[in-house]
Length: 198
Image 1 (cartoon, rainbow, N blue to C red):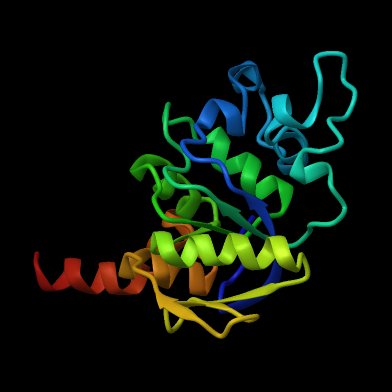
Image 2 (image 1 turned 180 degrees about the vertical axis):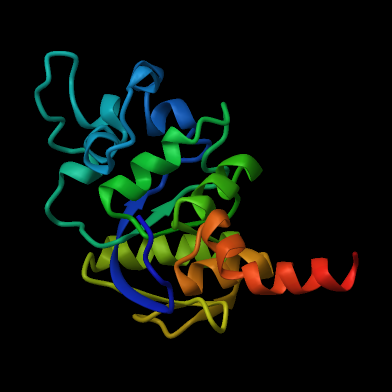
């Protein structure tokens, strides 16, 4: 889902669980799918937590709780561990999340999110704990993620933190470019370089 990033302000969906792995994000049986349709993967995000084996809804799972909504997922430490399946990032994007906030991301999953126009924002343990508590006390709490300035702000408390991001990926997100788009966009510069270095 190619969307330009700038400043995103949204309510949040809290998932205060640590070590959420990619098999929990999208179970392995969905890796056989022959589609990359966003709705298909989004509908099956956290499938085994959202639904029972008979297909009935697990009412108390956060994605099924109408109390919480928004395009920001706030997750516990070590999010996206396990296998390197890109399908996990497809599912997160397909559900409609544009930002995932955690105190630590598995490296491969973090890059998969970036490649699929989901912004992983890594914060301190203290900031994450405060955010979970604030959302618990008021589910309407909003968080502002400012990609140009690389800051994330808890709007309820006013507390902000700076987050790191690769400069190339930041450029791509802010301009709505994937890797191929970036190369096409740079075609003139590439051709000029080739002419100068014959």
